[in-house]
Length: 325
Ligand SMILES: NC(=O)c1ccc[n+]([C@@H]2O[C@H](COP(=O)([O-])OP(=O)(O)OC[C@H]3O[C@@H](n4cnc5c(N)ncnc54)[C@H](OP(=O)(O)O)[C@@H]3O)[C@@H](O)[C@H]2O)c1
Image (cartoon, rainbow, N blue to C red; front, side, top):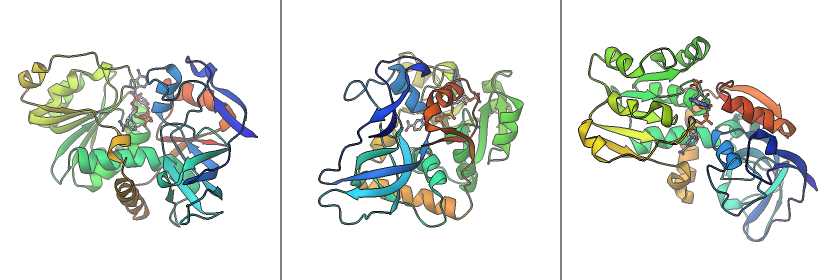
């Protein structure tokens, strides 16, 4: 037996229960990993609340990214050995001391990157990678808008977008968050609690507006985000921290300038092993070069996952957060 955080019914953070579970033994193609650090992500709250239905029903162990050490390998896994340092992103199961996972979802952690950094960046950093390099290929001179700039994905995104040569505009809800975002790549950060972010974007860009808007806030920033785009610009909706965007008529995209819109997910972009490896390499390279720094601003014991999720949903966290088993 080992400890894990499980939910037996959907609800608020109080449904996260720290209890004994049997992690099981690795079958063919699988590995038993002992976690050393676990990343906290907004998607964990969607599975807890029920916004995302559990793929295999309840109970479930939430948690989508982690780092750890290989304890045991199943049949046919010859490229990993006991003691190897590994990290991953996946849909569920990371809020645990130990877990069994398919070996083909793991990557080895390079020297020079700590377990805590790896746990904090596998999901969030590879999300920044595909958003900036694949969903829309950001190039020098592009103007990009990213909402919730001081968040976990946000601080990674800002540094990487700046490194690519873009003009990076962000939004955040407090002066402290604005200062933090500005020290992590964002050229301009708008307090969207106090100011009309559409008017601010128009002023900052001299009326030109943005080539691409990355929106993970959802309900509260829609349809304003569309008004921040130049004609034929790209609207990337990749989350819903304030709630889902209500259904809308496609003709709004023509009215607002023949816009493109997409709703991407990391799980689709990195479903194939070759894409996962390329994405992880791109992330490890940019972090190892020093161009992107992984900022861990909060640490909680795994047993306090409920407090961690409550703080994330309460907009109290900045940068990345990890749980320590
Ligand atoms: N599609 C994908 O592949 C993918 C992958 C990773 C993450 N995501 C999405 O990206 C977003 C960021 O994830 P994260 O883990 O890095 O979280 P995060 O950005 O650290 O936290 C969410 C932030 O959203 C802002 N926010 C605005 N309205 C909010 C509200 N009503 N309630 C709570 N927060 C609100 C808050 O920043 P302010 O206080 O500054 O407003 C808050 O700090 C999430 O929506 C997540 O689902 C999507």
